[in-house]
Length: 157
Image (cartoon, rainbow, N blue to C red; front, side, top):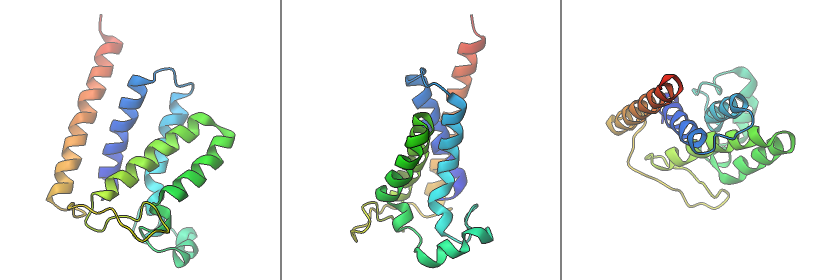
């Protein structure tokens, strides 16, 4: 999936999470880590938003796209490292990263969620295909509806 679709899905996840767990200490930290984590799984691809930078090229020599970096093991290792410093940041990271992985499970290429096992979760969504556009549109509309609801509650009677 393209980053716009991942971001639309993550924004929806953030809004739902914060709506149900409004006692999150630092909402800004949570949101920033969730949004940043959405970009990280594709760092192993040379054409991704992060992966196109030269600093990530050596990393790409050692990992294959949609393998280790697209696994629960990698997500949990990084998440635990963040958790040591900030629980709120770790929760945001796990939400953004986890939603990225779940979305990629529905793509034709699939992912090895339980790397190093060879099994792949695959779906029918082609990157930049009609179904991805439908998913993006659906989540974009849901994001707008949720944001309008939040604004109406904030400025309402």
